[in-house]
Length: 131
Image (cartoon, rainbow, N blue to C red):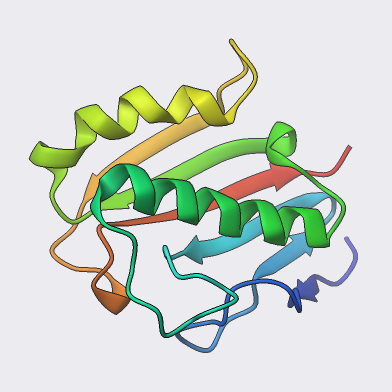
């Protein structure tokens, strides 16, 4: 087993805590949970609503994946954290398939939490596999 590679993507979102954007080991890539912040304007207000915040989070994850030569098609697992599970779970489920190729959705866990950094409604982390 080779040593892990720690990735920080210059175009990626500014971290809200001390972490790498992604860590890669033996072809597996673990992407830190991303928030719905705009990398070009990190202090701007967050988008309104679960749909807009989820889209921003996915864009941030795509920036990180793209920075290491991967895309959403390489994602094997997603963990989603929602601050209002009852209100937002159905809307998230409606939106989720639009990010992936039909019938090739990653495995997924969705968890209700009491709070997230920067007051976000959603945070998503990913596991991907390099071909």
